[in-house]
Image (tube, rainbow, N blue to C red; front, side, top):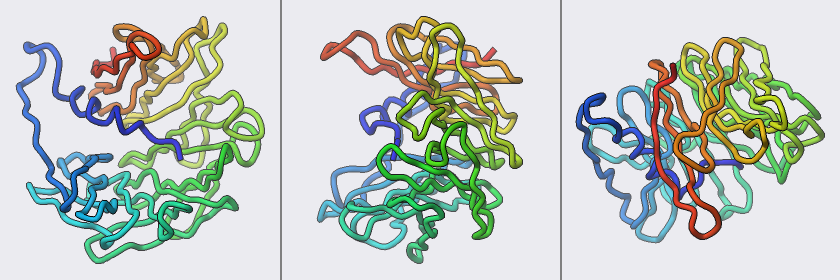
Length: 294
């Protein structure tokens, strides 16, 4: 499963909290607490500020949680291994679970009452739910190695969102509240070949392309309700990955600061949050950034 590296997650939060003093109000950090262990990672937040992710218990097991109104609640029951990956505006949480210590994974809904498994709609070993709309539709990925197929789950009826290449070449990364799915699709047999960012909306799969020139690969990570998309793309010289904004059929690449960068999320005001790495090798330093499109 492709996910945002855990080492960057803290920076994504910081990116929302920093910026020119004259342009944004002052914010503070809120510790979410734990479920009895030493690790908590937030992976999803909705428009009301509810957060999901995973937190360890005293035994070190990873458990899904809902953080709301200052209280962290265990979701899905205790044990290994549950992770809340996405939360919609109604506070409904989906993610991934394993009943065999992380050997294989299943997509799941999590609630305080327990875990509800979402059937694997594909032919591959693992499944994960990467997003849930406010209408309750879910983006589900069936995956194994370099192969992946992505589906829209509408009331238990699964629709394959399609591919730009072979039948095992599409990996969804998110679904927003309006039901827009983002991700990437390999142009060959699987996702290991050249790949383009994609958007799936209203039954249509759109190829976001690249920046032209030597640029080949792109990955879409997030979309707002107006259909603007952000992610990462090879620059025109194919010398670095840069952030892109895709809007009204046009992809624009830009690299804040230095080095490699990627946008991970975009809100309805066009503000993009992401991460970048400056330097190379062991001297590379992750940094956070945020900007406003346009």
